Length: 244
Image (tube, rainbow, N blue to C red; front, side, top):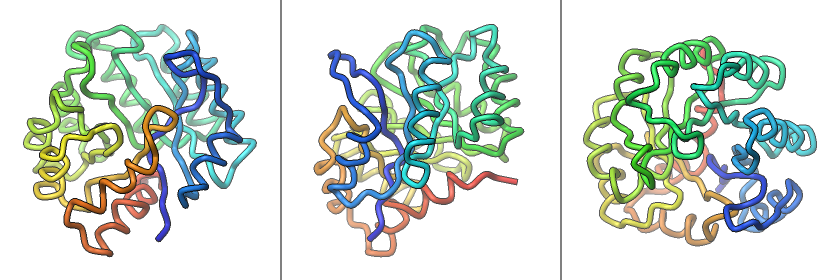
């Protein structure tokens, strides 16, 4: 079975460990992963983080899907969206209020940044959980206002919000969840039961989490072989394909 890792990272880790695109590709290939979507959060500059990803994309064009890391409150956020999605041809955008230091409930710039992203037909990832700044509910409202855009909550919003966010988005066909770093069995099983395989995507959160465990846990959620194909690569394939 093919495996695409929808959500991983590149650049120095929070504990200061260095890594490289070649290490990323080598490590993930060991587990049978043949494509990965990555963003970088290791630099202070939004532009420097995105440049790291662009260089990796050029080095491994068949393996790496680049995801832009955008700070919506930055004065040049729209310009950076255009640079990453237009000039660099990245294939998605990630928002992480925790790292960029804003509260999504009180950041009116998000709407216009999302509208600019929408012009490129790519998906949007949101980090929910792990910080008071990362409460996920306001993003549901943004997604309801933009039904043609596709949104993904990474980590199923963690143990803090996983169960409630599944309920919140269960009737929304433009919202998916990604599985990495969430080891709460009840939340994983609820996602499988309520959202189903068509709205769940596999990610490993490399280099932060053990890839083998991130893979194995998905085999314990009652999915059939065809459903596992959706989770492990078909949903990622669809989300990486630019919408009209």
